[in-house]
Length: 90
Image (cartoon, rainbow, N blue to C red; front, side):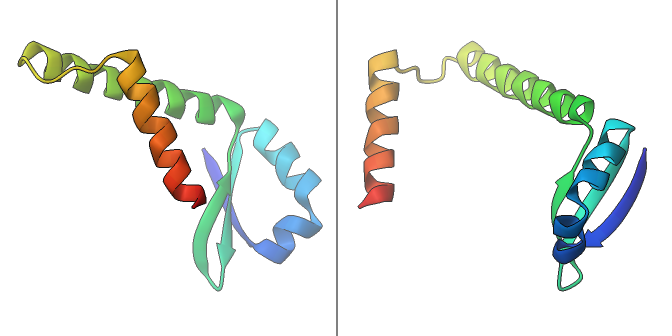
């Protein structure tokens, strides 16, 4: 995989070009003050990363269940998620 690095200003000025490069397999790392802060990646790479993350989380959950770890109901999960969301907006 080829990679290039550009500043935020360069990325803004030539976004269409960087998107075209991503379509052809080139990752563009976007920097702020010389520090990488984001990346524009080919969609296949992004999808592979998401799939790998999902697989890793599923394996971790299966391991917890196999060890007799705690479980929660969907209602409990949703209640916790909404409670956390409410705290973020307060």
